[in-house]
Length: 31
Image 1 (tube, one colour):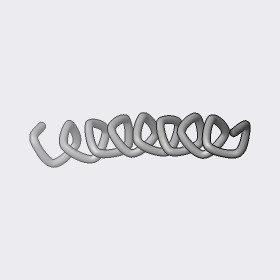
Image 2 (cartoon, helix red, strand yellow):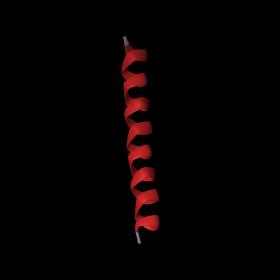
Image 3 (tube, one colour):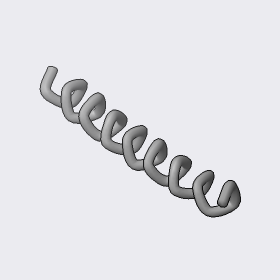
Image 4 (cartoon, one colour):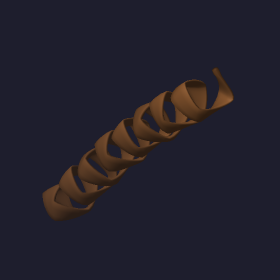
């Protein structure tokens, strides 16, 4: 169970991180 749950959490966190980086980059480009 742990081996299956951990990758899902990592993937979700990675997706959130990518989204945050994209938004931050977009805001910086607007300046």
